[in-house]
Length: 338
Image 1 (cartoon, one colour):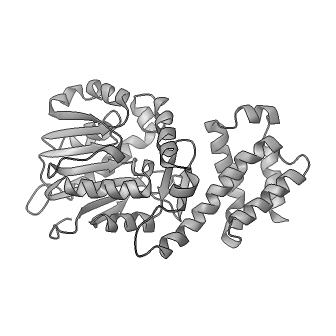
Image 2 (cartoon, rainbow, N blue to C red):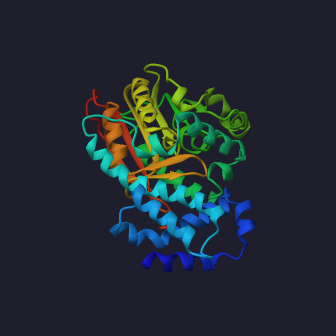
Image 3 (cartoon, rainbow, N blue to C red):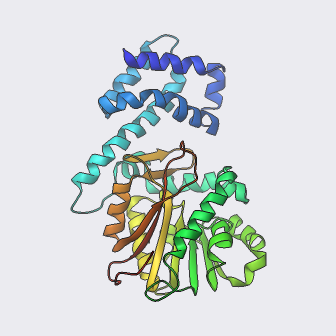
């Protein structure tokens, strides 16, 4: 059987004992190794054999009956990840079947096992993240400069001038310590507000943004699913690398509230990872990465339209694609942009 060769190849990569694997079964190192090594060997099979729950059960049985292939204590974790992959591919079909309305897709209804757990896991993850630029970038600090440069250029197309967003006030959603505010928003806007669920990040932001701190009007310590922007307050609402921490229904509701928080000609900038197919669940930080179809469905149903979109350049090929979207209310006349 073809998949046995993949399993044995994966097994040969491990130098640690089964006991060591068990002790580290929820570590970031193991999780990344599973994603990068083990499941790469399954990609070609997924193109031919959809992984529904029945197939996953069969694979699980094969794990138990193949001596020395992999420890039984490790099977539960593998089956969980396999289930996520199976649901990832089924989410595409669910999206098409629910064309008349938005409901929670497969990953954000079945896999997360409840909204409270989904959000609680993310908060626990960020309690361990240092309040530094490196922490905000997930230790990929080398990507910060190309990210900032692309964001500046994209924003410039939609602010200033007749029929465009103004430059009075911007909101930085999921701001962390204010990396985007410092390098992208504060040089353009008269005032900026930050919102983040982590109080420790917002406290550090006051030091991090000290040079331009007089332009920071307020710090809001809220989770985005609980935050409502004041009506008609902002010229630009910036949402970067945080939409994946909201369930589909909460993201839809939040985008709708952000739409109501815009001034005339205001825009929402949504910047995030975009999956190539379906929806990807990341167990390590309790987030989802949606594909273009799912994102655009949520955008449309929130009463927003895509004014412009661009792919982030300058990131390594192995990175998940990052896209920038400029969104405005469907009630807003078409704006002029380059």
